[in-house]
Amino acid sequence: MARKNTRRNTIDVKRRRDPGIRKIGRMYIIMGIIYVVFIAFNMIVENLVYVNTRDQYDVSLESVNRVAVLRKEFSKINQNVLVLASVEVESEKQALLNQIENSMITLGEEEQIFLESVKDRSENATRRFKHVMYALDVYENKIDDIKDRLLTMDSKEAVDIYVQELNPLWMIANEMLGAVTEITSREAAMSRVKIAMNHGAAQISLVIMVIILIIMLVVFGNRQVKTLIEVQNQTRELNEASARLTKSRKKLLDSAMTNILTGMKNRYALDESLSQLINNAQFNIAVFDVDNFRNINDMYGYEVGDEYLSTIAERLKEEYSEYAEMFNITGNEFCMIFYEHVSDVQAQQLAEQIRLGIGQPTMVAGSLVLQAPVSASLYHYLPSDNLDVNTLLMRMDSALHAAKRDGGNRMYQIQ
Image (cartoon, rainbow, N blue to C red; front, side, top):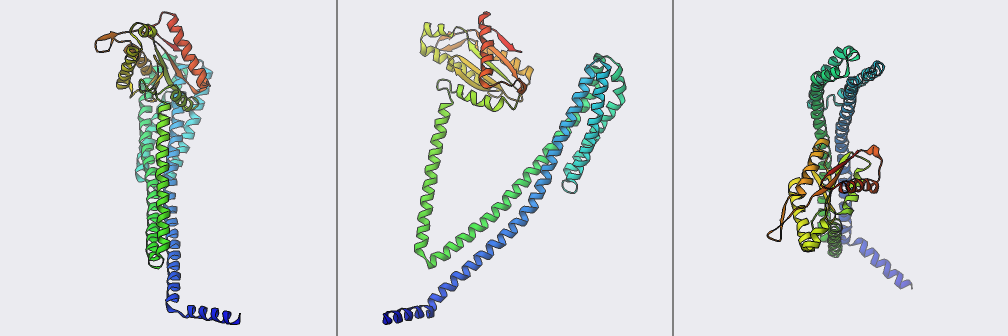
């Protein structure tokens, strides 16, 4: 036992005295120290740059928020002026005038806060906003000039004054505020890009250092590097498999949300779209149904009926896809949710145009021309209506069936 212990101690002493082993140990220590120092330096630099760019981004974001508050307050003033021009009771006029004056005070305070938020930061935004302030002052001065007359004149004369004198000034100032919003938003976006670029540069530096470290480790430990490569390959294969699985799931979801015959979104997709809109936005929605479509199937067969619907769907997608999101709810029933840029009047005109377009003569089966009248219902939905998806669609169906009961070939608008 004593001999074995003596021999083991002798081997340990030789290992400690072996210059090669000591050199390898020192190399690993140096590599570790360099790596730690580099990481610490990289983190310090990244933090300093991040703090600087984050401050710029915070200023830009604050500017965007302030402009939004200004636009909201300015729109409130204009709305109250329009209401003031339309009411007849003097007490109501005086109350509205007091609200307008209070909003003007708030607007002035917000203007000063905005100027302070972009001071010495965004010369372009400051210059543009001074133009906005001038336009707002002109609008406010015009209100001061005519407010006494607005209290005494009738609503028709007041509306004429608003349209001729106030509304053009409001539109100019509002457009200028929109330009300031665009500038501040762009500056905020640029700040985000800077943050991302700085973060990316730091990450690239870290990656480079890791690569260097791996190369050095290859010199002193080929087996460990091979193991790392195998792990990376396995990870890549798993990522590729995950990507394929995600793609397959997406294809499955798309097929579940699409009408196979017409290529339009189906009822499930309609429910999902309405669920996102119904509590957050106002929108116009229309439902169209081909009258007596069953007669076409009975007379010419289902294949002709399917081709007829498919042809109508292609025509709708080609002519109206820029105005509305389209759905094929059932075989001969279509739904349109008009986009935000479509006004209420335009939506009503388009709905009637679509209804007549569906009912146009359509050639199918090479030479057969089919034509059927179409009934429709139109609804301008407001969040204050407080409906769920099923109730909304039930109202649309009820109006649609009422149109059919009254002879079809017409559109009823839900009030």
